[in-house]
Structures are given as C-alpha cells and as structure tokens.
Length: 257
Image 1 (cartoon, one colour):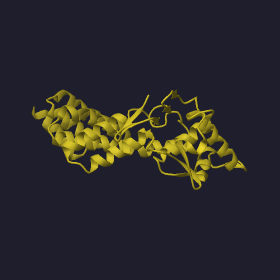
Image 2 (spheres, helix red, strand yellow):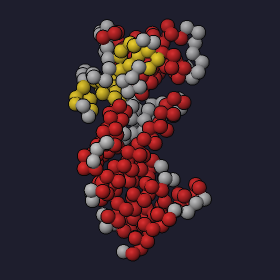
Image 3 (cartoon, rainbow, N blue to C red):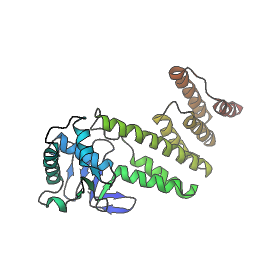
Image 4 (cartoon, rainbow, N blue to C red):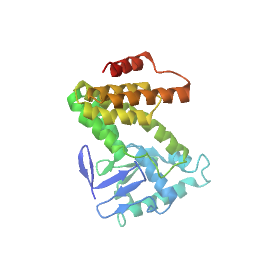
C-alpha cells in the first residue's frame, strides 16, 4: 500500500493518527511489529519531527522517561538498528528511510509520508489561501486527522503533550474550515467542520457559534437550538458560566424563525 500525501504518492507511509502503522511497498507494520516497544517509540518520536532531525539525547530522555541507562547511546543505536530491519529488511542502515544526522535521526520525507506532516502542510497552505481554495484544504486536513494522535502511547508524557498540542491545532483548523464554508455559502460543508470543533473543545464558544450559524444557514433550526442548549449546558456544568452575548444573539436568530 502506498501513502499519498498532498505532494503525491510515496512508497512509505507512517500513520500516527490512531494506532501507529507503517505502510511499506511490501507490507503493513502494526504497532506490535517493530521488534519491541522502544523501537516503536523511537519511530514515533522521529516521526513527530516531521522530517526534521531529532537528537539522540532528546529521544533517550523521552523513551526512558528522564532516566536513560548509563550506556544509553549504545542501547539507543541498537534499537534503531532493530527498527530499520523491521521497516526495510536487508537494506543497509544508512540507506534506509530512517536517516542518520549529526547527533540524531530523521525520516526522509521525500520517500516517506507522515500523516501528521501532511496535516501541517495542508494547514499552512489553507491559512494563506482564499476561502474557495482553502476550504478543500481544511477539509482534507481534518479528514487526515481522523483518529487520536499516538493512540498506541496513551500514557507516555511526550505523547500526551503532542496530543494536546495537536488537538489545539486541529480545533483551529476545523473552525477555520467552517468559517471558510460559511463565507462561501456552503452550509452543508460548514456543519461537520463546526461540529468537529465543538467535539475537540466543548468549552470554546466560537465553535458552537459556528455550528449554530451553519445549522441556521442549512435551515435546520431545531439542530441550531440543540447546539445552543448543548453549549449552555457544557458551560454551566464545567465553568459555571452562561453563553456570551454573541451566542445569545444567535439564539435570537433561532427563535425568530
């Protein structure tokens, strides 16, 4: 199976959304196929670099939770050798898609697609495009990120931090996509993007405002009212607050129908 990113098809694909998976020209490697937990985590940390070098010392600090063993560099290099054999058996180490850099490693993004990297590329393109060009980019970015980032690593501190950072970016992408769709009068495309924003951050009123606007534009007043009441219930329950004036003004639009 080939990985296809925004720049075309590449022979290898590293998928960090959902459970870690690598697609090669010959087979698919699941989370348990990397010759151990540490080699898999090394791959994940390098993939989080999105093609940029990741230093060995940083990798060691993360995979050993701040307490690397005395001869950590030798051990780390042995894990990398195992990882390379898992991904590209029979290929000399430095010829693999896992490149050695001064003091670290990186993935060759000319040969390897990384779904998180593709997400970032799409977001950057969309942010600098007019609404008509940006909307399909926002939609594709949100589609790519369909799954919990690094679900294979539910407790590792570095993975938790990466998830939090990504979720903020995904929320912003979904909201921006909904804004673009509303600007274009494409209410049916705005609704799922706005709904995704509310799922990612139920306490951010902007997402609820977008969802109410989209439902109203799609002539679904009952759904718009439901969105308002769900927003209010979330704010009351978790923050002890009422919706702000902009959200209440949108409710007035619902009631006016």
